[in-house]
Length: 99
Image (tube, rainbow, N blue to C red; front, top):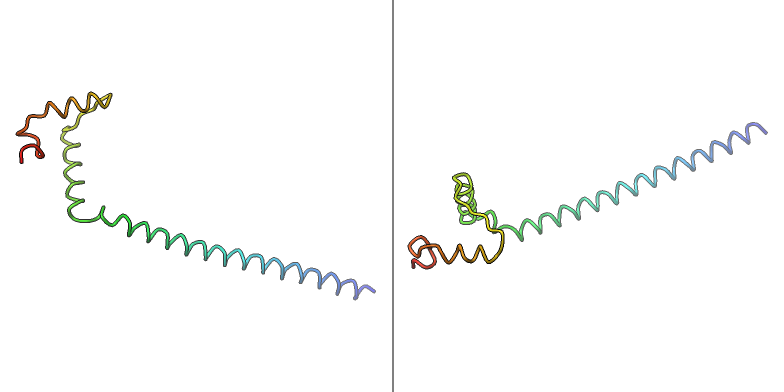
């Protein structure tokens, strides 16, 4: 009777261990699939934003950083203030109007 009970407990433990291993394996597989999908999504986003890394855009970013560091910036509380400031730029200093 004791041997039969031990065998029954052993089989139950084996069943629990097997179930735990299967659950863990399924979670790992799901995690790997999700990680792969995340990588694909990031790569697609990177392709969509490739323009940012072009030499022309990076030159503009460097120019903006230089302007910021040199204090060549302005702050406007309203859009009307901003538009008024644009209208007050001398034509010679405005690359769009200077053409």
